[in-house]
Amino acid sequence: MAKKKKTKQSPLPTVVPAASSSSASGIHFHQNGGAHKKLHKTRDSDCCSINFVKYVLHIFNIIFFMSGLVIMGITVWTVFWKHQYISLLSTTNYAIGTYSLLAAGLLALIGGIIGCCGVWREQRPMLLLYTFILLFVFLLEAIVGGLAYLYETQIELELQHSLNSTFMEQYGVSVRQTEAIDRMQQEFGCCGAVRFEDWRYSVWLRSRRKDLIRPTEGRRVPDSCCISMTPKCGLSDGPSNIPYTGCIYKMADDLKHHLILLGAIGLGICVIQVFGMILSCCLYVKLKDVLD
Figure 1 (cartoon, helix red, strand yellow):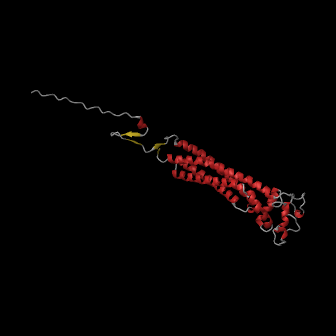
Figure 2: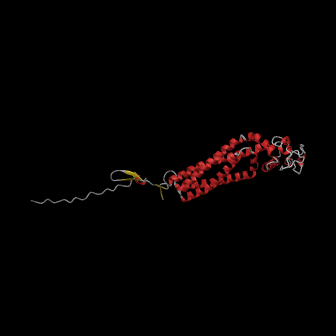
Figure 3: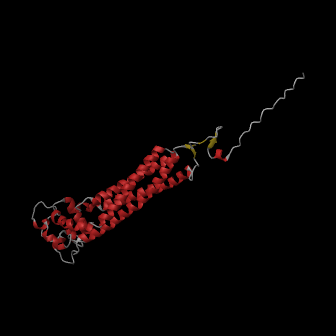
């Protein structure tokens, strides 16, 4: 019998699948047909890259830092030039609002530095702290701004109830309030709380006490009432010597304008913090799973 020849079969060629567009997008296929996405994202993933967010956040930090300087400057000026009259107010709303805004300005300076360091070094804990500082500054400025506008509508009513009694009862008795009243009458060009005749019923003029800070010595009004202040010029209360306008009106107008300024700064600048919180949260999330 003739032996059959064995034919040698060549192995089947191995087909290598071509790289599909899904590989470029981070999806890998297995032999069993399954697919999975990469857990990490690149620095340029999504609509905004990390470098872009960092650049915008750096610009925001500069604005945020400068806003802190503006707040600090205005509140320090308020403390040194306007708080000399705080002792004449019956409530502490004005002082609390001013010092709260001063704290917000100081936090803005500190937060700006922390934010720049966190963005530059890409430190997520620093970015988280920076976000909380932005939130706290936002709340402080919003509260101060709202209270300033609310208090502005009540300041004249408060002065009508408290300023006249302070003039009548504390002048010549309390050192701090006596000096504040003298400065007010000289700065605003006024005399008395409501009118110059109020001094006739004051403790300073009627008590005849020997321990008064400002002795009467025959005066009809304090020397600080005089248009041209000289020793014992208060002996005369004629219209050529003293103004007849009370201090309550000019002080109310001055405090109203200043409260409007503080309210505008507080409510205006607090809007900036919203953008900062959005940017910092966006960068915080992007840095979570990024691949350098």
